[in-house]
Amino acid sequence: MKNYQEQFSAKDTQRVLSKIEVALALEQAERNSHRDTKHFHSSEMAKDDWCPRSTWYKIMDTEESDPQSMNLKRMNIFAEGHNIHDKWQRWMWKAGGLYGNWKCNTCSSEFSGTSPEGCDHCGSDDIKYKEVPLHSERYRIVGHADGVWEDAQGKAVVEIKSVGLGTIRWDAPKLPPSLTVSTM
Image 1 (cartoon, rainbow, N blue to C red):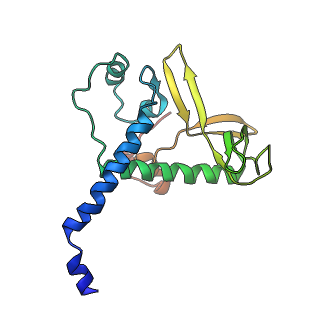
Image 2: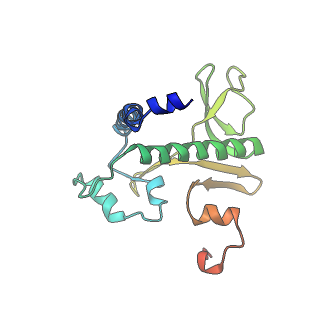
Image 3: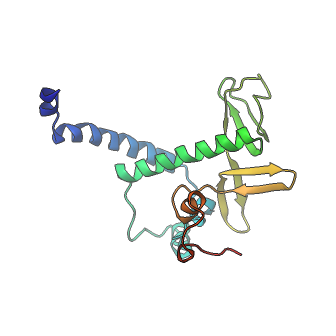
């Protein structure tokens, strides 16, 4: 084992990580090439540090003065956030209240419903939640809600945030009052 550790240097680590970073950056650029830049995005507006002025400049095609780079660390944070979304969506599905669009991984059909047991077309239970599209020309909003919860009380939009005081408060409801914010 010691011989292996001697052979595996920091330089070798960069050999691997730099290739991963390039591959992920290309994947991210491809994904963002289809992103609508003429509307507000619901996921962007839900952020604590959202700046409406900055979003308006993007809509008006103004070049960003301080663009955020998508380095490996940042891309890893986003990937972890996607995993957390998948987890919560799976839990809401199993709890019986997740409404939205679904895609069958077996036959590729797409359908809407509340926590379906399987595909409406072929019956396969290998289905994936596709989230719920949001669109309002009036308010220039596009995007996807992380979920819609449907029960006897009606429907409620779900926006999942993976990091923040809300997450901590959920796990530690007895936080000091100075760290909590009243929303009512």
